[in-house]
Length: 104
Image 1 (cartoon, rainbow, N blue to C red):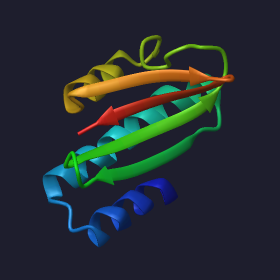
Image 2 (image 1 turned 45 degrees about the horizontal axis):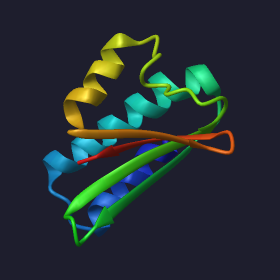
Image 3 (image 1 turned 60 degrees about the vertical axis):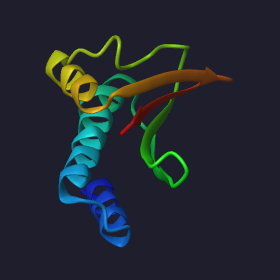
Image 4 (image 1 turned 180 degrees about the vertical axis):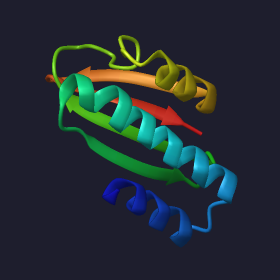
């Protein structure tokens, strides 16, 4: 709930179009609640906007071996929704810290 209200506040402060705001909220919900947390527990969510590229980046970081939680998600519907919403998705792992970044 706190995570979603944080995203809602971010979208309101930056006057993000309702359709984009809904996509960002859905991405966060699916990645954090249905994909990363059930597999890895605690995670960190970050949302940013690039004025230069005019894109939003939503990233979820979690500890563990170099494993893309999206690729091995037990909830196929959530994984499909994330892939359908975000035209670009990246995974990286540095020093045991994984990060999935979805770009809108």
